[in-house]
Amino acid sequence: MPELPEVETIVKGLKALISGSKIVKVKVKEPRLIAFPGAADFIDGLTDREILMVRRRGKYILFDLVGDKTMVVHLRMTGRLLVKPRAAVYDKHTYIIFELDNSDDLRFNNSRKFGRLYLIDRCNEQPAGGLASLGPEPLAEDFSEDIFSERLSSRKGNIKALLLNQNFIAGLGNIYTDEALFRAGISPFRDAASLSQPEISKLYQGIRLVLQEGIKAGGTSFSDYRNALGEKGLFQNQLSVYQQTGHACLNCGQEIRKVKLAGRGTHYCPSCQQ
DNA sequence: CGAGGTACCTGACAGC
DNA sequence: TGCTGTCAGGTACCTC
Picture 1 (cartoon, rainbow, N blue to C red):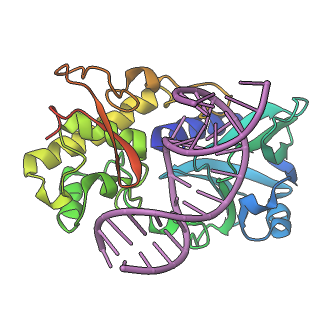
Picture 2: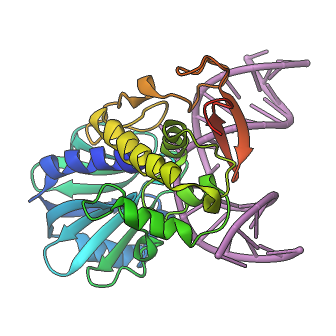
């Protein structure tokens, strides 16, 4: 799925395109994608509501509505949120349609149907999947190296799995985890507790840098990801290890390797990452 | 708590 | 052409 930079790019686009619009009609073609509440209440709670603000938390997209409700969307692997003219033909995998008062639609597309939508009370995030238990935002001003180091010190287990854990840190997925570990020169096999202070520092910087660069490039599109206007990102052209299996490492020339770790394809340079 | 597997779905691609 | 197996940006849930 889209990870933090992809979701951030989508949210930026949606903010510009649909903030202040009113939802005049909701069409649900695949009710199972509505995780909370039931489809009827979901439709009811959204119809004739104005969208005040669009924001991001981890990989979740939040639409604050007039009143006390917030619609929460998680794209999982293949979800897309696209703004299209009402007249545009529906895509094969367009499953939820929000008709807006300006003759545009907001459309939720999702070929693998893993995405989930929620309508919650703004003051209670509990029903929205893992939203309530997310870890800190890695790019927040108050997410300091000290806080990262402190959180790391109390954790056991493998560093790759930990970085993918949204309760530890919000927004990293498989691409940016592999890229951040490469930048930090840390092997994905390392125990989190074994990292030295300089390594923790490099990892902290690596995570922030890679996410910022990803955002600057408009995200990574190697297959499904598109922004709110349906355009691809460019960060796939700047990846150091992810999907670079067999290529020469840009640092040392060694072949980039791929293994299965923490249940995910994991790309690394065996010589630069110790 | 951690590790590892499965499930949820569809599509792309490799190999035969 | 078409079948089969594998893999995919994520997460929830299960067992050990």
